[in-house]
Length: 332
Image (cartoon, rainbow, N blue to C red):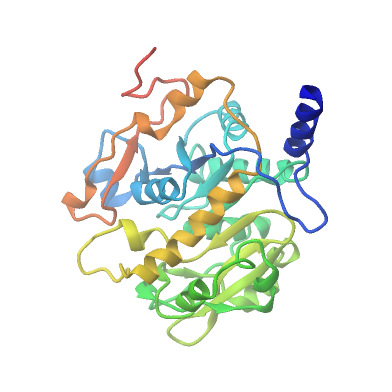
């Protein structure tokens, strides 16, 4: 009886989906990697002793949805990124301000991780949620790294409705969305803060259209439609141009991210999706000790809001040495 029961559980763990694309839980301890970004401009001026950061709002959003976070540092070796990818259950590529070029930075780290996810999803289930700059990066990579963005005005610090396409109804992201969530997203709630747009016609005429589908569009101040949500046609990889994390966790004065219960719930929906999707693979660190020393709990956030910066709190990092011991890790 014991072996029969064990066999059943083995089948459940290994059997990841059936004909209706309904996946089976593989882990209830998901860990999501969050890619760090290089400090630029005023952030570098304020924190000259550090090289990279993660906005704490992304970390809080994932944790509030039942996941744990591991920071993925920039400026590391390919071996580091492969090891990190094989240890986490999902990935968040955040928004920020940097360029799609250079080496040892957000761009090169994210590009490799996306490539690894594309390869892995042929044999397993590995989700990615990319936000704002991360969304633009997905499209850039899908377009063979040819620039597709165009400058757009009037989308800094504004709330812009989503317009859902027919394809959204069958998408991994939205097919189970409650009506109250989609109703909120159709109103002036989704928070935009970007100077670049990927216009719908440009997307449809690009290489990006081959493997990706548009789930929502929005309109700029000239009423031109731009892409605001995409999803890979085969894999659980999603990008959004807006910022769902800011409603609950960013508090800079005079900004227009709404803090209503409806806005917070709608923002939470995207991180719930990421965490639930991350439970569908059983990747893990090679040891519990390695897991503990990798978690973001080892780092203390900085109250960057005191400097009147965009983020209320930030995690700050130095990029040298992929094997460094986190500052607050206590060796057992």
